[in-house]
Image (cartoon, rainbow, N blue to C red):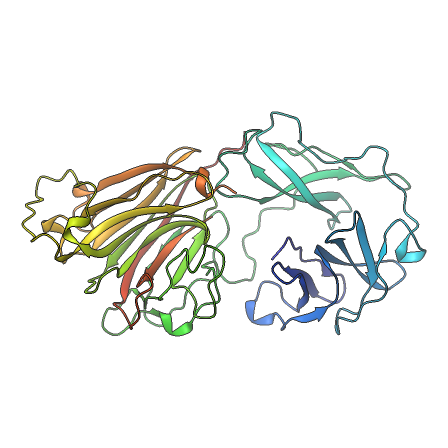
Length: 437
């Protein structure tokens, strides 16, 4: 889906958003009486438009409209629309017409919001919108990335930024530039007594998958999930998340398409420059290429994975520096390994494959992803009950996923059959700092 916003209609307590399904350029409208309640959102209503970045708005003439960028014509187009049925009128460029259709004139100060051709940390500022708070002050929101002018390291990709705006009657709005630290109009008093599921964005995770609970609202899937693949606190292993393997791994068929069978992955968004994410894994594979682990995931063609996988014993590329290795396995027999592998359009490290140390076999493992600076992740593994035995598998640049999620997966890597489920527990995400400049 392309960029979308959620305007709320004053007095109606109804939120609308429009989305573009990228592969088909198919346009849909959703509405909700409570945008914070997932169950409140409607089914999709379709409307016709060949383009993307569509957005509804309401003019003082009492009519509703949708704007969007046409797929190949230059300029923004606008049409009167019925948001309940998806019926739209004639699409016109917004330079023509009367009433909600214009006429419009160009702001001589354009572009009014940009960090292009600067050394600012926040770059790629765009998709902006304006709103007015309860005190009558104007604000602007936009998307931006924390990349600096090099555009190499920005694993949280596009984030929402907010700036104060001055808008005098009869004049064009004047935007403050996007910076890492800003001042503006007074905020209302801090209030965390707000209805809605899930944690606040500044909180971390301590999720233990208790019996009777469900996956937290901020957990997310990449493809539409198969409900039978995810079970919270199953009877055979309470306080864990059981994930049944999908035939497809995280790259799936070709890095873009996954078909209808789904991928067994669930994650949470990276929301901090610095963080530590870790989870316990109980997994006892028995067949070739059965795998479960953790991933720094952006898309099917951009992810960095560390998992336990069943491979022939002669598959190793390295051996973990562990004094208790004592490897006596017969060459070619199937044995559990730790494996790192990555997928991206930019170069990624070669696969790292190491047999699990004998002393780790049959034990609960703890897998960890840590961002200790703004450019690299450290991926580690070790027994959950012996932190001193944890070993860093590699430090890897975040450039391959800067264009995310951290989360867990389970796959048979293309093999048919039910496969071996994986049990994840003690899910932790600890925020440890933000770089804003």
